[in-house]
Image (cartoon, rainbow, N blue to C red; front, side, top):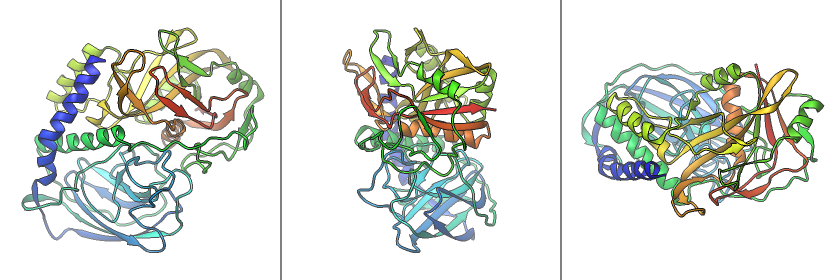
Length: 444
């Protein structure tokens, strides 16, 4: 934990030293640039603008309500499982890459493309949006920047991370242009983003707990049209549940799995909230295609690796995670998905264990996924540990979405076992809640 605390302190300190100047740096957008107009419906999670981005492109957004919805979002709406946890539900958001980190746009924002990508516009919602309507969005894209006029301090290039799979539905013209950003500017921008992520998760930016109920789904059943979280809202459109019912033999195998993992002191912790079915190679290939990285296992080596990769101008995204136990042994693999620098404080991650049973000759993997959103006190020993988003169903669904987007899912089901976990604490004392269902992913 010492290395975790040290790295966290470095992020916050360096963000304060470097990121603030980055936010107030002076830029003047080169002209003429290109202008685009879109009407973005709140009825779909993501809209493909058809705009390709080059490194250094500067995007200026201006949005207004084409109908009833406010691009700044709806105050007080349920926030469990939102793509951007620090923003209001229903707000206009964007991704600068197909698998990129969603960022808040709201009614106005300036963003810079740090690498080649593709622009998606979306709605900050998990399931049904809090309002029905559309946004009128105007975008000016300039291909370069030179020192001159100040840019507003809110023009940071990233915000709190959450990974949500795209559902592209419309097209538009593409843009061109390049800019060679210096490495110090890149670092300042990423540290600024990391600071936003850290403070968002640490001081109340996480998802809001809500009351769960299993009465809508009988125990031992699989739902074709499930809710995505304890809020009772449908899952994001990108998560497509397979038709039909889950095989009875597979249900029986899942019923026999432990419901929760434990630490080395036998303290019960995270819930088992998803199952993968496939060979070890299928699992590795699928997760690699979905952008997940295997976490490092040694703290000392990880610190050295982080320093080396920073020196080599690479992003370190494989921070170690603690060892937890299922079936009497530690995890076979730990995977994570995070934004550069923010990985210290915030990351999507999970652990998987090879189950002692197989289904139709295929290997079963029991998984426990959570979303780190900051730090808190470890109730076991008083040291610093990661704080998880208590709405753990969001991470369960996120895992399924990334695999489905990577075209690695043969079939996908929700299954509510007879003895579901709907409210508990992890091994370090942090509370969490769930609708109790397990996401079953059969890989292809």
